[in-house]
Length: 404
Image (cartoon, rainbow, N blue to C red; front, side, top):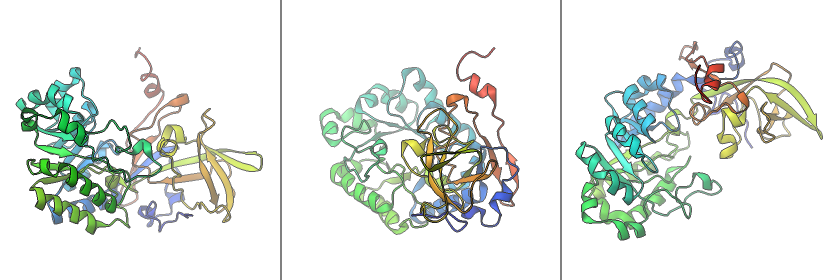
């Protein structure tokens, strides 16, 4: 059971404010990005890099709100991208920093453009290394290959498990031994693995042992090792000592530069989704508050992961207060956020504040049902709120057809 208050990590950035009063005049739904929390996360990551010599990249797939890149840049080595557009965004908005890219499969019609922006390119298969490696090497890029150590440390989230049986992600040792040759191996500067999702460093230690067992002989010939993302480094209970031990082990054993590419850890607990109650209905004894925010449209990981997001002053112990099922306004019957106990009855117009909404929200939201995209606001350290976007009908329409 969980109760979320100002002492909870998800809302600790609001401890100096009265959240309902702070957000009272905001047009809803809207995202609010917390500068102070971002800076604190950045300082934590920079401290890790200073102590261990590792290099830390922002995985833009989790957080790509580039208005905050100048704030984050001093703490990071650069950005990690999943394709051409993210690579370009990182190069343009965090200039002078490294740009790494990994894609499940690169496109011929985009690869030449990609070479303009990325300096490290990681391939997902030996076939694609053969197809594009010489061209990338000739352009002066540092090349890597994603490996799959077939070491699953997740339970219940197969959609996010790159080591699940039959995964398309990375090259197993069996495939390596069958397809790799000396000419292709000579193109490689590093190896990359990514196996974690919102996990602690004990799972990294387990994974690294599997990597050492299966690919240790290869790593001694490499310049760098990218340990991917999914490390919840900035979480209060994260085991930093084990992570640092893993980094030092890799550096001392194989002589490699170690990269980490967290996404969530950079912006963990650094954002809020502010919504309002539109209506309260009842069915079979269940009170249902319909919000102007949608799980399907505005926080899709709630349905994909799935998970129950934190709400300020709410409790998952349904015996503790006024019980409601919170849901979105779309036509999707499953647009349900979860069941919560609130301190007082909900009525139309009440604010509902979700926590940890900087990650996998603004970069994944959509306009299903013609739902407007929520605007994005900046929360400064002094409590000032500044709008960063003005989304409207044109943003919905122009995704679907010609502009005229």
